[in-house]
Image (cartoon, rainbow, N blue to C red; front, side, top):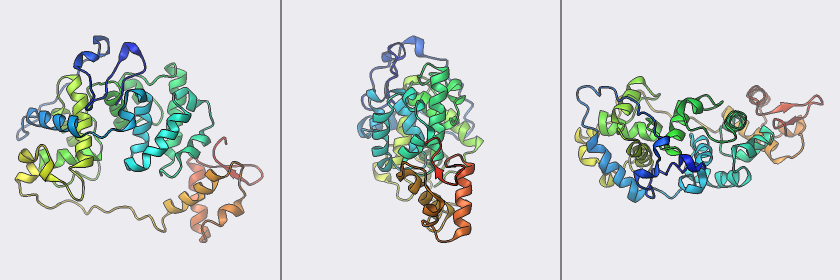
Length: 334
């Protein structure tokens, strides 16, 4: 969500401090994605764009990856970290990460295990390995810079459709549909009339997101960021604040009487006693030690041996842990 470091491809943050559209030079503008026929029953998207973008201009949070100094690399780091992780937990890790590795080449120059160590307790540490791999690829293929074009972003290891679209939109101001959980929930309620979106992203949701996308790149980038922020702050999963929503008067779910969820039950993942908890404890021991650790140190973190060994095997398979010839364990390359 910040300008690219290259002066020739400046790309402003789609937020309250966005410069005028002329801040994007013509050389950075690509042909917009075609918007499919929205089909019958879809409201004019224009009645949603103005209120949501205006709300964002007034209420967007001042987050470090939205500031100009973050650059495209800061946007990419934040997108990796924010997947399934709240902003409050990400902030201190992000700031320390950017202090240590302000450019992709800085991260690529250290062993992947150092990235895993710095990931700390954010959870899902394979994201650290993927971000490290992406940094290496950018250093080799793109001169250490985050690429501008969506296909080049998508070709990076560990970068999927969502992350490529998010970085292209937030960092470079390109026109892409950015669908995370928050955006999907906003669209499900405001347009479809359902309390929640499907459990997994569907082709119909992608078509809808493209149909709702503003035509010009500047507004499209702001719209992507604004709908995400609206879902995070107002149109929340459990207790939406409809009284302050800028589109409450045209929300299909509200107009239908706010019906309850009719789909499959939505169950959260249990943590206590899970393999994820065991993995987390094993990883904590390895992160805290600057030297390889003996198996006996790992045995102490979880009494049930079958589950502990299963979790350890999973970490080894995922490349998060290495077993040395002498039987000790360490983070990869550390």
